[in-house]
Amino acid sequence: MQQRQRAYIVHRTVGRLRIKVPGQRHNAQFFQNLRRQLIDHAEIGEIEVNPRTASVLIKHRAGFDLGVLRNPFLELDFDGDTAQLRARPAAERHVARLDTFIQRLTGGEVDLAAFLVKIAVAVVTRQPPLQLLAWFAEALLRAFIKSKTASIPRLPVPKEPEGLLAAA
Image (cartoon, rainbow, N blue to C red; front, side, top):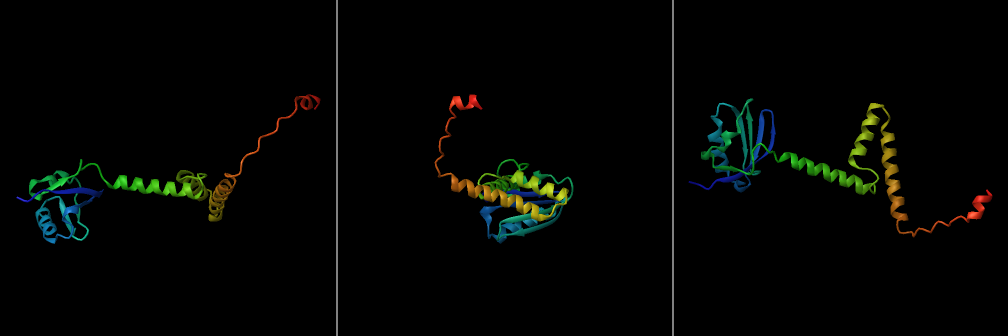
């Protein structure tokens, strides 16, 4: 018997499931065998395999049981719980990168949440896109000024003589 192959779920929506088997990339025979074993399952409508990307797309009916993929004859060993989708952490990483990019671009003056709120306000109030551009340009200008003035030493604020305050 062949060694079990590590696999993971990349994406799952209603009626669609995509898994990857990276250890079998470019192995057309493995993917055709996998396709043949799954195609007769009552809940599976279509199966598309792509050995170049090590990917299997399963189009299934409602109620498809992921336990089918744990069948020992399929020779797949899923990393972690199959209910945990790896697509979500990847999306979270992309959002975090976008947030970091916006913060770096604006010198910390604007983050992704603030930018999205400003876009939503502009859309709801039907303000022109120029308003959004003005908000972003203001943040960039603030960041530029902040970066140029950060190296200038601050002068101490002189204290007012107490006598002058009393006379006023």
